[in-house]
Length: 155
Image 1 (cartoon, rainbow, N blue to C red):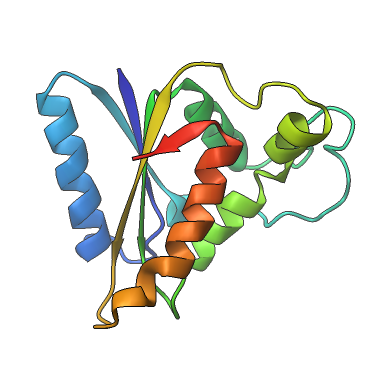
Image 2 (tube, one colour; image 1 turned 45 degrees about the vertical axis):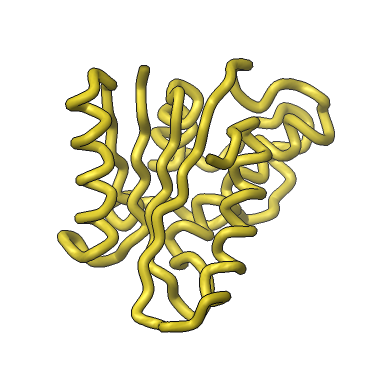
């Protein structure tokens, strides 16, 4: 089993990174292969809504997001970790999700499998200094849409 951890924190070694690292360490000690992607370390643009993916479902922007596409496709489980900024995921996470427009087109417009068909699970780890019970709801709904596009069951 391969587990992909995606860190959306702009701060290395902070609470979000620590939480994700511990989850990946636990998975690895249980026998899983793990990969971690720190979105803030990547060089990628936001979706340009250029329509380049409209006919093929493949994003035409050649940048570090291509690594993310490959890693998402090969993962059996995905963990997304993000601090909560203004009641939502970070800009890094949102930019990655927006770049999955090509996979949304593939699944919902072209009616093809967005990723390899298999049962996969997704986990969302998030941290916040706010003490509001509903402060995570917006971020959670964004991540659920992300997982649904990739046929990943929100766990």
